[in-house]
Image (cartoon, rainbow, N blue to C red):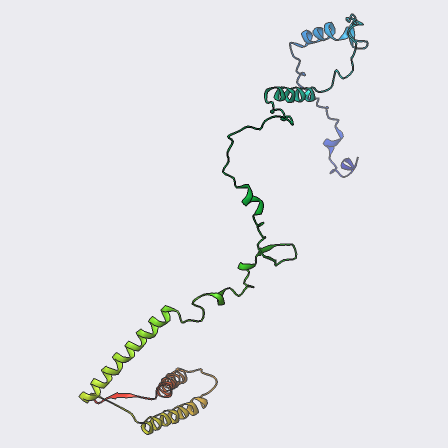
Length: 255
């Protein structure tokens, strides 16, 4: 009704329209249906309420006996045990007056076995609350290393390294002595070394004062170049100062 009320007014809407009936396809029917219906009626319909018409009456002699439905596993196990006992039979216990067998020997020393000291348990330590334990010897709690024969001695590789260093120092000293005898090198005295060291530090102070005066904002290439130049020069002076402070004897070449 709502659709009809809001339709656009037209003369053609006043003409009644014929109803179109859709023809449905006929329902599928199997050709075996009559055979199935006949088979069902002939086999199931006569006893669908009270069962088959004629049933064989059970004989009074075939009544349900006790334990007839129980499993026979226990009976089979008992029979297997009985058969095993019949096949493997232990020798009888000798009587009190029987003569023991002669010539029987054994390698076991019963005297030693009777007097043997029982094995003592290995000492262990428990290291967790859940009961985990390990041998006390491997736990690091026993001072077993101080009981070694070579405890406290210098290892062999250290002797070898010290000997190599001593030989290298001797070779260097011989080379320096030969060069000094030839007049190719000379060494600075303590006064000269201190004077050079003070001059290096004075130069570093001047470069550092100049470095502190650089602008904080490096916004031009000239400022960046000046900053890099001062840093490189200060680094070289620092290396030279460390060299003169580290070594007391300084050799220089004459040429």
